[in-house]
Each structure stands twice: as structure tokens, then as C-alpha cells.
Length: 269
Ligand code: 6PG
Image (cartoon, rainbow, N blue to C red; front, side, top):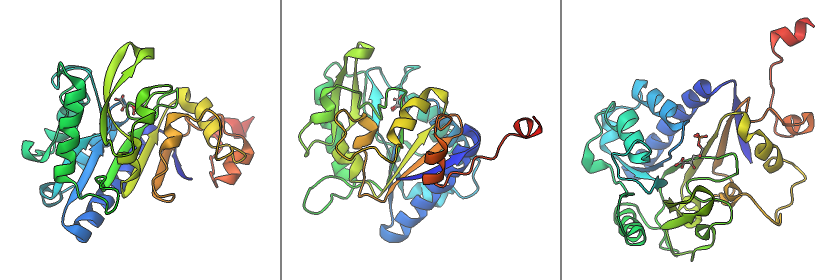
């Protein structure tokens, strides 16, 4: 597991923006296109702002990019809670990204199962399929992690964790939130060339400490949903702020080569 740590969400997002643009440049150099799935939550808007401010996220890169969503809430795309609205307000509009390059799931559909299938077909139509599996291989998937270890809308104990491997995007009942969500599946996430997991805030610290325990066995009995994000073994990059790893032991800090500068006030005691 590769983890990079940053003092705060701002510094994390600045690094994530650099990695985003690098992944875009690599993809465009390799196959003249860049397909990325965005995430919801509180961290992505900071990333989006850094992208909008970046001189490297150029109109030329945008013109060869297509934007998808890792998940969406069961609300219309103009609803305050919509991940689509979040991306429109913080990335698409500020960066003048043309609508035809953005593919959105409609969380407001009255048939989410059908909408998930429609969106799955849309993804498959625009994103190159992995030979053999037929699963679309995005160039980059941006993810976050909730305090319960969920990612995208793959929540603990929900059906979307166990859908058939050929499914790419599904509707998922989330009883703990008393709602339904639309979410990308592990098959689609793990088929991506690059996966960036951004984890910020103290609330994630307990789960981060468990997940990054060097003694944690591969076949842990009740893994957190985020632990199903494995990519190809070497293309999953974790970005965490200091608050999210605040419960790491010294052994964990050493094991993952994390050097947390001691705060000045602590030194003076
Ligand atoms: C969503 C996201 C969700 C998010 C996590 C972490 O729709 O909310 O897909 O999985 O990534 O909840 O959110 P933060 O960015 O707030 O940590």
C-alpha cells in the first residue's frame, strides 16, 4: 500500500491535483484520451479548486478528457446533495468543461436500477474495455473514504459489495442512511489504470489505523468496503492528511515511511 501524507486537506488536494494532471497527460500521450471518474464528499471540491487554478490543467487536456462519476446520491443532478451538482459548481463550470465531455448518472430517476444500467452502458460506450473481462478501464478513479470505511457508495453490509463481476454501475440500497445510491462497482474501480484515495479528517483515523496495520491479514473476516479497492496491486495511491493518520502508531509511521514533523509547540515543552 502506497500512502502519502500531508499536513492538511489543502496541501493534500494540491498534490492530488498534480497527480490528476499527470495521469491525464500520461493517458493522452498513451492513447490520446483521458477518462476519469470523480467522487463526492467534502474533499473533492478542494481538489477541483486546485485543478481550476492549475496552469497545467489546460484546455488541450480538457478537450481530450471525459468525466464520469464514481457514485451519485438518489437526488436529481441539480439537488444540493448531488455529486453532479458539486462537480458542475466546483469543476465543470470554473474550467469551462463542455457538457458533451461530461457523462452524468441521473440520481433523480424513478427507476434507479434502470438508470444504473443506462449509465453502465454509457461508460462502456466511451471507455476502452479491458481485454478478456470486457470491463471499462478508466484512466483514473478518484475516491474518498467515509468514517465507516465506505467508498463511492459501497457501504458496509450492502448488496453492491457482492454484485456479479460483469456489473460496472449499480443501484445500491443503503439502509444505514435510509436511502438508495448509485455506485460504481469494485470491478469498474479495480479495472482503472490509476486509483487515488483521498482521506481527510480525524473521523477517519480509527479505520485508517486498522486498515494500515502491517499485521492485518489479507483475508480479514470483515473487511471495510475501501479494502476491496485493490487495483492491480500497485496502482492504488492513498493520500491522507495528518488528522486521518493521527492514530497511527510509531511502528505504523515507520513501516509506511511517514515522517510527521513534530509541531513546534510540542518541541518547546
Ligand atoms: C459521496 C462519496 C463518498 C465520499 C466519502 C468521503 O458521495 O459522498 O462518494 O464515498 O468519498 O464519504 O467523503 P469526504 O470527502 O467528506 O471525506
